[in-house]
Structure formats: structure tokens, C-alpha cells
Amino acid sequence: MKIYVDADSCPRPIKKILFRLAHRTGIIILFVANKAIIAPRLTNIKTIEVGKGIDKADEYILEKISPNDLIITSDIPLAADVITKGASALNHRGELFTKENVRQRLNLRDFMSTMRASGAYTAGGTSFSNSNRVEFSNAVDRFVAKNHHD
Image (tube, rainbow, N blue to C red; front, side, top):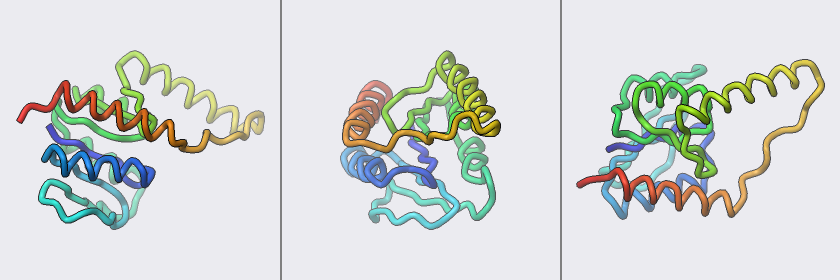
């Protein structure tokens, strides 16, 4: 099992949780981004800079993942593609995407995009909170406990 992180939009507290997880478990964690990522110097933490361009990190992740892998992302279309390839996806707020809920999220995302484009709805998402950090930490620990086998 490897963990891939869609790192361009990954909140700093989530990265710190993943750094500690890598140190504690030895799991290979790959931070994939359009720009350089600063990470601890552990042999199981990898930073991959894919260069500029929309969806370059997503394309890299989709090319490399295996069914046992976990992808950390808030990108719903990426999560849908990951699930289609048999891997798992977890968002920054600790929600594990499933075949059922990712389709609902895609539909809601498309609807909200249409509403924003029409000017009818302009509010952004909610800010990242301490409770989100705790929920993510618990969710990733549960996933690893269930799926990581040395």
C-alpha cells in the first residue's frame, strides 16, 4: 500500500499528519504537486514535482496508483477516477469516498458550478477547522489499520 497526496491544495495540517504517519508506519507516501513540496527527509516520503499545467498531478497519480493505494484529495473528479481504478480516496476532512457518494458529490459540484456561473450562488466552501484535522487523522488511521499489512 502506498499513499498518494494531491499536494497542491493539501492543507499544511494534513501534510503534518501524513509526515507523522510515514515516520510511525514506514508506509510510502508520495506528495505530488505542480511545485516543490518541503518534506522531512525520510526514505518513505517522496515529493514529485510534475511541472506546471492543469491536472498534471492528477494524471501522474492516476498513472501510478494500484488498487491497494490510498489517495488524499479534495478533487472530486480525481476521487471518482481513483475509485474507478480500484483504489481508495479520502478527502482532507476525513471523508472516505465511495462509488455511491462520489457520484452524488460530482452531481452537486456540477450543480453548484452552474449556480455560480449564473451568479445565483457565490459563497465559497467552509474553512478548514481543527475538528476537520482530527476527523482526517482518525480516518487515515482507521484506513491504515484496516488495509496496511507489513
